[in-house]
Length: 437
Image 1 (cartoon, rainbow, N blue to C red):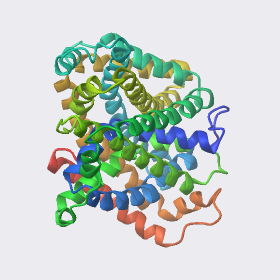
Image 2: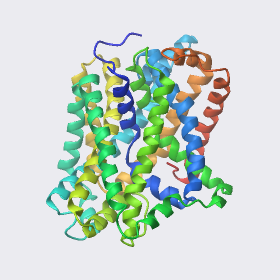
Image 3: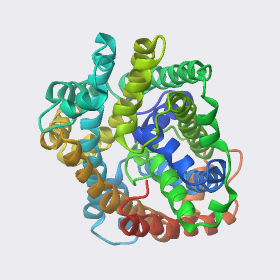
């Protein structure tokens, strides 16, 4: 299939930064540092790195390859695969990963709205001047953050209306380097705090006994899977905008590397500061919205660093939200024959309106659990099954050979089919544990 004019990334850097923007999100910031410390410190990183390598090699690259091969998103791609086999129903199956991404976007836009409000609160100093728990409790309540929520979605829609090259690519080229730079500044600053070394030890000191605990491997698998944004939709649509001359495996590897660096950098920026002021690390949104404002309030120059932190988190959030709404907008545009502007506006409204009723922490949390445990990983599994057992790994290797010095070897087929089993395990174990990523 041919791309529409203007619907292609213009550079390798632009593509990688957009993909990294999709991958780097709240899980890198509020969950990864805590999970590393919880499951053996440096020991946890061993299975985590192994799963990142597996998922980037056959999962991420497979979704990129399928998107570029078909030139469209999950609905058109699954329809394409089944039609090659004389089967129908691909469009219907393609709705599953699409609904998973839309569901995440609905809840995620709530969180991005919170982050935007905290960024403004850092400018005024309001998030540092009082009880941080009380401030968060005033935000994460029903209809408690509507203007900020609307602003986050509206900004995303405006960026997407500008197009792939002028919107997604251009903003990603600015926002993702800014994210890394701002987090690096914060990480350097907190390294000078008395007691910061305890944070590094919590993050990196290995407890090798955890490698004998199956749960460590399960959590490393889930963290890697969700961190790379493998959902059968978002990375697939970015792949459809990739030029045939691009090296998919190299770009998948670069995306995985930068995403992992972002998670580690978040740990180096957050945990030393938390330990320096004697605050126990916690998982989930409270680490970012309650604990860290307490830290910044006690830190010299804390208002500036609070602003830099929440601004960088906002950049990470908005680039992820861009990807989610883009894949939904492309599907609507392709099936309903709407213009890019009209389809993006419709998708933005569909993501916003239900989210207005999920602005409480409990509402958002319950919704995201439903989507990320049951729907989204099943969509990723479905795409993996059709990609490697219906289309076949041989066809994927042919696509990967374009723009690369050589075609992947036959061992790719074995690893790819094993990956499908791992993707199934992510879905099943996620249900068993009540969430693993």
